[in-house]
Length: 262
Image 1 (cartoon, one colour):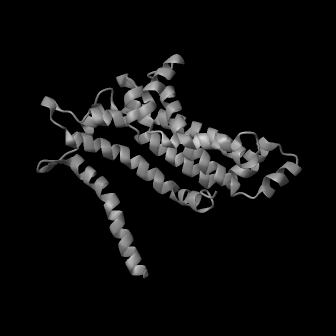
Image 2 (cartoon, rainbow, N blue to C red):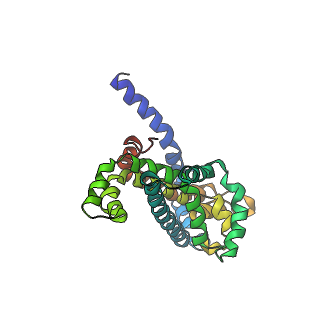
Image 3 (cartoon, helix red, strand yellow):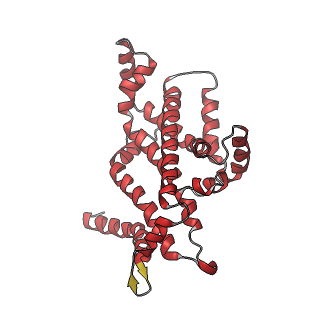
């Protein structure tokens, strides 16, 4: 494919992805024949206040991303570097979670969280989000570690490092693209998920942004307040876009540098 044709094709494809965001931004400030920021003022003052919902979402994101990275890193390292009984079966069982549509088991998980006193809590919700991120995350990190030559950690151990120090001092810097990819997926899932917070969170002051945005769509007499809802969409989309643009080079390297081998 000639270079001009390639660029034209990429621009056309990009427009299909950019158009919904641009349309949402336009709809959020267009009120009839005039332009106004009233939609954003309504968004800021809705319910418990947009600051409360944003704080809840940020807490959920930090717990989910942090927990996913920690568990997936140690699990991926163990699957890539150690041989233990049941290793293959355990890995298959982790991947099997992908075959279960997660909305079908949210009610049992809600009951289980009640046993631990974690119902209607962001910690309980984060644990559920981490569980559903683990199959992809462990798969990515296992293959990321397998793409690193064993001679690196063997040399570190010869120099006196144990398994943990070899992991933290030598291997982690080598799998940064895989870590960023896992973290980005966990961020997008926890930032945008609607079904799990809707079922597992019942207190209005603990709602996340997706639940709040969907709830604010109803206006007087059952009418849909589209401008305010589109303002919420823009408010949610911009951080995702900014973080992806910031980390895209690591994200691409995470897939291209052997992260999906094996």
